[in-house]
Image 1 (cartoon, rainbow, N blue to C red):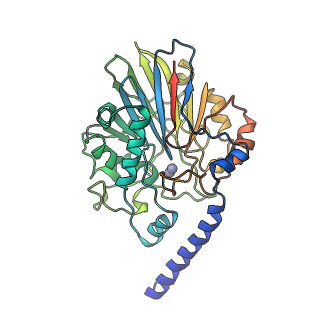
Image 2: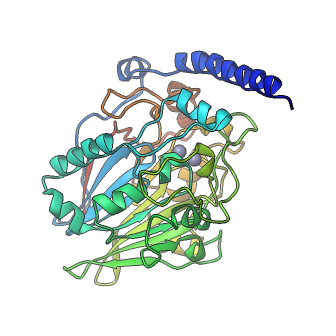
Image 3: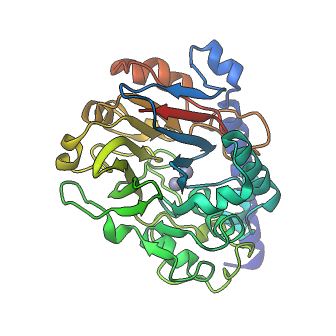
Length: 377
Ligand SMILES: [Zn+2]
Ligand SMILES: [Zn+2]
């Protein structure tokens, strides 16, 4: 390909991106617009009351995107923390023309303050209590901030669990004694896997079961950044090194079943699936599921329309969760310091008014990033 032809080719791709951007941005809805269309958006702390003595609680902050902070009895885990929004055009330029992206310390610091302020703890407590970070897959909006957070929030002390591709992506920035393959532990359909057990000071345990799941396409029949990273990228040796968006390949996507155990029995059970996918991918083996009901199911919304099976109704039917929460519903190209809008190219009112109507859950929580869910049991 001659240089001028290549230039024209790239310019035309960039122009197509601009057109897609213009069309896609029309589909984003503000919170008030969602509410006018009957979508209930949770903007303040919620308390879920259990049937027990309510002496115990689990606090969950929705961090935004697929991100969650889950804490119980002075210890905590993070899933998919991501705060370094990249404008849509930056991602387009990185994809097509090799432009670079990287974590944004100011935005991460803002999110850290939001987290410890809303939980009423100090920055030191936050770093002491966070024992592990789990990444559901290797895309930049799930993994890119993990190395920075691990080094600068958690002083490199926490353990990081991710799929094998993501382990390769991060091998130059997270020390090998702290970086683990969650994929090797994962349950695959009915084949049981192993859990990561994090024992707390009061004798309770946070037990995390990785489960092999999947990831819906981003557009009809088009999945971006699929495949796996086979060897550590030579240019990613510091959490703030610049990368291309194509460096953040998906690998094998995981869901998680998270049990809070006391005296060897499960007292609270959470299912987390940050990416929509095809039933029954990502579900826990029936043996595990029948041992105890799910107290809270947390499901991703983005790309729901590309499931051929009726997402999320079949999942809800199988899980029968007592409470239901949706994440990954807002526009992650937008800074988290601004009021959220719904994710591009996804008809969010339709999801709640038509798709979810088919299975009629008793209720749902659709939190804006930063909202804390306080579950008592
Ligand atoms: Zn993804
Ligand atoms: Zn995502």
